[in-house]
Length: 117
Image 1 (cartoon, helix red, strand yellow):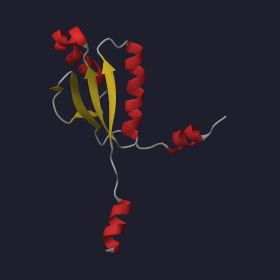
Image 2 (spheres, one colour; image 1 turned 90 degrees about the horizontal axis):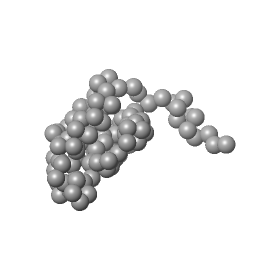
Image 3 (spheres, rainbow, N blue to C red; image 1 turned 90 degrees about the vertical axis):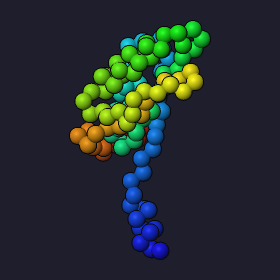
Image 4 (cartoon, one colour; image 1 turned 30 degrees about the vertical axis):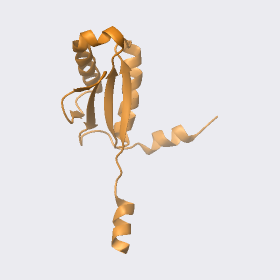
């Protein structure tokens, strides 16, 4: 029993975070959300990228695929797609994770985040 508790305590938990994009998102907003995704990767989480379609946007599904490719290209070489993008209702989503070559957690960055003025 003690061994199970010890293993559970030492196990690394990986959450699935979700970032939602609209089809008409600007380049700056893609960059801001991209930096947030990279922070999730540094913490060891997987991220679901979701493009939400509204109204007539559903007639242009190819724009959603190109948007996801643009986001994945922004994230760089250290990203692995778990599967190809899938449509579910009015949402196009794909799960991405960082490969092992990504940076590890930076304790200095965490220390700077925790200090408040």
